Amino acid sequence: MTDKTSVVPVIMAGGSGTRLWPLSRAGFPKQFLVLSGDSSLFQQAAQRLADLAGPDLAVQPLVVVGNAEHRFLTLEQLREIRQEPAAVLLEPAGRNTAPALTLAALQARADGADPVMVVTPADQTVADGAAFNAALRQAVAQAAQGSIVILGVTPDKPETGYGYIRAEAGSGSPAKVARFVEKPDAATAAGYLAEGGYTWNSGMFVLRASVWLAALAQFRPDILRACEAAWAGRQADGRFVRPDKAAFEAVPSESVDYAVMERCPGSAFDIRVVPLAAGWNDLGAWDAVWQVGAQDEAGNVAAGDVMLHDTERTLVHASSRLVTTVGVRDLVVVETSDSVMVADRSRSQDVKHIVNRLAAGGRSEQLLHRKVHRPWGWYDSIDMGARFQVKRIMVKPGASLSLQMHHHRAEHWIVVSGTAEITNGDKTLLLTENQSTYIPLGQVHRLANPGKVDLEIVEVQSGSYLGEDDIVRFEDTYGRTS
View 1 (cartoon, rainbow, N blue to C red):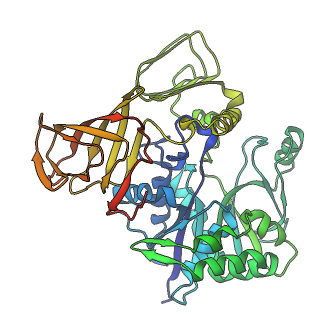
View 2 (cartoon, one colour):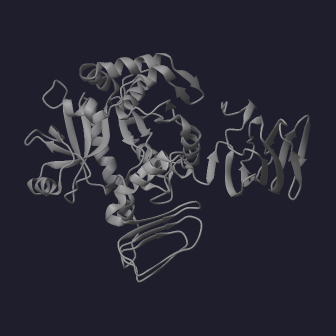
View 3 (spheres, rainbow, N blue to C red):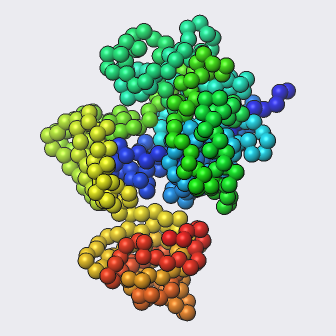
């Protein structure tokens, strides 16, 4: 009986998904959205990796590398699918995928072990789970022998939006990688498809942690040294691991492909490709969401409260109200509570230009939805004027907001459902449905839910400044200071 191969699943979840605006925002990016099926893309990735477990593989708890701003969202989505991560590594700044993978490798080697890492982005879909699992098992078996293995998607069209991998003919199975090819033009892509031997680069890698660190030491020792310095100064907070902020900000920004993978062919490192034919899609833009969606007889994909008439090959996504179309073709229409985006489906990649303009103009629609998720629940800004703002606030059972005060606003709270435990200065109140209280400007206060069901209140703010940064926190369960 042979020992099981130890496998550490790694999800890189730091992307922003700007081309799926307005549904994807900086504060709630596409990997956390439900775009295909009944769970988010991040949850689907975690479940696919968990399915890898078997008699020959010892699959360890998940390691996630992501943005510190999304830490509670990450844990909550894992809780929903009953997964407990080994660690959530919080990047204090975006530095692309090579540093992210290096943090994961250092975490995997922290106890002296050298597991096989199965590394995947958080924002892809796979239609055929069995085929994916089989390809991944082949990759793990090869990586256990010291190889670097990439999952190469079997192309079904001359796609210009992906990088390509050329396999070395007659080099066995999995085949050795002859070379990597940048995103081609249409004619070149058609030539690759006709020639054969090419696959799309999926961004999924399988390799031992020590192999990644050795390859990085050879090709980009500057990235390795900087990541090791940030890792040495790390701080742990439960499942959260925070590299040293100043040291990590000094790490060069580089992708896994540019830092290591494209340098491996012809080197001492054995790099191979396992073909993947499993209905893979990276949902890079709204056109890809349309492609994987359930299309009606006219080729339309609809989500939410949608009515279509004389409409063909169109994606309509309604989040908060009725959306109708008449006599249109090949469009993308996406509605949220604060924005509507209409695009030619063939131009859906260009949505990023709108996001760039929103960011340049300091518009909040680039950052957050009207409904904002927090570790304790959510709030929805339903109305506002020059000196007032009205919010719906939901607090989960057993959760509480920070003990806080505001310099520029007072607040009225009305309980809609559930039970509220309210700290109001030196008083503690228990309020139930239809009861209310007033929080004067400058008063220290806290809202908590001591009950077993969701608490929902309506909050009316009034004052000279109503921004979310007018909060002074005295105590916070979630480690926030602002």
